[in-house]
Image (cartoon, rainbow, N blue to C red; front, side, top):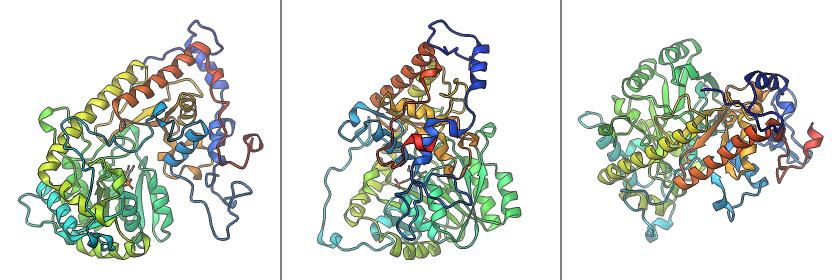
Length: 503
Ligand SMILES: Cc1ncc(COP(=O)(O)O)c(C=O)c1O
């Protein structure tokens, strides 16, 4: 990308590349000198973790035995937005491109969503912790029709456990992993940090994904890691949040085969399995799942987590599922019986018709066309702003945007995020996808430091509102110089310590 010259001192004339370099050199290099990063550290649970006890402020950790796990990125970002005046009443004035949810309203050519549901007396009872049998049947049937036609081994309801949301599903799974090495990759979905560290038996083993490899999992390396590190479980989102990359076709087949041969359990979080944007129009309507490459549904230890949250665009329903060998499902029934008690009974019944394969076909096609259009629109506008995306998403509804080529301090995700809050726009700073960012002693060293995640989940008008805000920030940088950035941030509403005290 050609470097756009930014003014340093309010001059209106463009400045030279040398001036930019000098300015970069005199700018800060450690998180301690960045106001945006100091605010992050002030929040409960976000102090660097080391030998010192994890205390954040005097009002915290006063409840015996209780520690703050640290908020997930999206919660931190909503709290910061609230400090900047965001509220549910004023949300229409904001562009929430941090949102990890798709738009839920009607989209062109999609079947309409149910607006009412039945509550028969039976549904007032607890549902089984593995879920309503007819819904489990419907999930198994959908996967067989979509991914397993002609295969001898087919899923049945005994391979399906209904769970109250994706995170509940992941927690149920994490709770039944024994004392083993569990591999995950960075960057990946923020909640894996807390999910993996809440269940203390397993030992999380991180692997960094490289931008040069387009954030793809290196299957050969995975094979070596299984052998050398004794990995027994691998967890990944596929398609991957936040990079928007996907392992599919022969690569996915090879990954499944690798774990089969090595007797390693593969947990694939497939929440974005429909959000695939093929260049070739004839490929529209296809989705991606490891279910296609499983040989024996009860012998291959492939665990699939998915649900209504993203693909059906129903995040509020909290109806999701885990698919895997029968013997996993009985373990999940046990962990569900103490963790969450099962998904909402009436909504499980209401979900059954939504899994009809014919309906799903129409919904999937409509979704792919609509979201591809939004993706292309946002990528084009970003490019016009001088923010060309190096590795555009081929799946999900996220753009992993590298800000490195902007002048400091706008080139770090946390400061860029704070500056956009002043313009009523929310994005997610990249460090939250560096799973467990608070553990780092210097957040500036994170491989995700220069990134933000932009969601194109919301409707097009909101996306344009957010892109207009990015344009304003960049215009201001050119016109007024960099001295206007990196400071004067609002204090968090619940922070007991004032910023000055933490300097
Ligand atoms: C990869 C991934 N898995 C799971 C979830 C969570 O799903 P749920 O909201 O149903 O808990 C998300 C939500 O952002 C996600 O991105």
